[in-house]
Structure formats: structure tokens, C-alpha cells
Image (cartoon, rainbow, N blue to C red):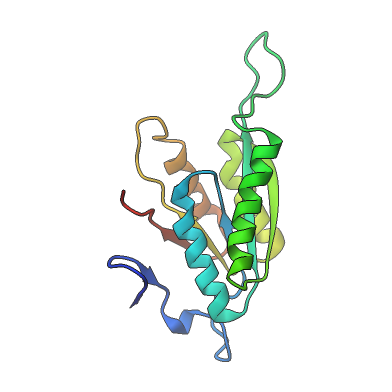
Length: 167
């Protein structure tokens, strides 16, 4: 492993990156969200894309919860416009660094976020999924951790976990 940017942050070995040697990582898929924690995963994916000249696929899952009994329709924690803004910000970050990137906002029930990510990775033909490892918090305990585990278990390509910066 070679060191990148700050102590404790690492990049994949150079022989894992695609290039003339035919390494395994070329097209990277990154789920992005509105939390600052996903910036490290995005930065790692951009680094991979810069080193391999491979494309980057950015995915934002606009999750929804089932309607409550007697309530209206689905409940979305964010508006469609907010979801689009999250993806636009991530796309601009990648494009500003000279990376070929495309993106999509997908809708999925909160419990099916991981399935949506894995399906998009498979559909797009990702060679690696670069995923933020969520810190354990009381509110998200079980939701984010479960989604991360589900992506790792169901993905047909390697999953690179990137930990968020410490405050």
C-alpha cells in the first residue's frame, strides 16, 4: 500500500490500477450523499480514475420510507432538487479534476439502498465500488452499517472502503 495525502489514508497498490499492465480497477462507481463523509470516497475514486484514465460513475440514492398507516404516500427525507444538487456537486468535483464522470439519482426504499447500488454497479459494469465506511452513530446504527455490509456481500466486484476524515 502506498500512502496518500495524510497519515492513515492509503491508495490501492499500483498493480491493482488498470493501465498498460491490464490491472483490475478501471471503472469506479461511488455512492455519494449529502454528508461531508463521502468526500474521501469520492476523492479516492477520482484518484483511481486519474491514474487509470477510466470513467467514474456517481450514484446518489434518494431513499424513501413506506407510508405510515393512514398517511399519504412515501416519505422522502430530501427533495428531488436536493438529491440532484448532491449529485451535481459530486460531478463538478470530479470534472474539475479532469475525470470523465457520469451520474444518476436513483430512488429506493431505505432498506433497499444497498441493492440499488449493487444493481447500478452491475448494470454499468463497475470494476470497483468505492464506498464510505460509515461511523457508528446511535441514530444510524444498523442502517448504514447494514447497507455497507449488504453492498460488500452482494457486489460482484471488489468494494473499497474509505473511512471519513476525523473531525
